Amino acid sequence: MLASVAVASYLLDAYPSAPAEVCGLTNVFRALSGFSVGYYQQPWGAKVGYDVSFGAQACIVAASMILIAIVRRFGHQLHSKFGQVR
Image 1 (cartoon, rainbow, N blue to C red):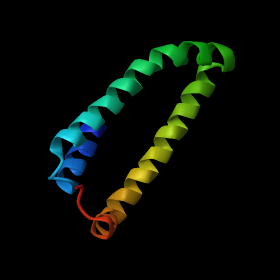
Image 2: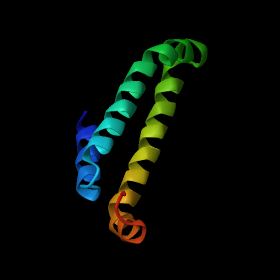
Image 3: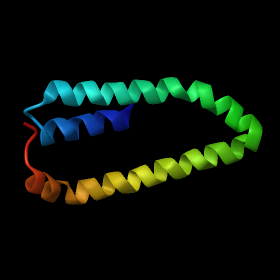
């Protein structure tokens, strides 16, 4: 929940001309991600072991954190290059 607030805040600051689209897409992705966990977590954990499935999820989170750090570092340059949403 804390990460989604930070991401939404960053996106709203980066694209102030499209707040409805930013909030809508952020909430859709958050809801779909949370809803889908129940469908794949149990079979995946039973098949390969819960330590492996949670370890893989931890790797996905770590990769996401690296991507967030890159956007945090170079986001202003990317935003300046590609401009506002029209």
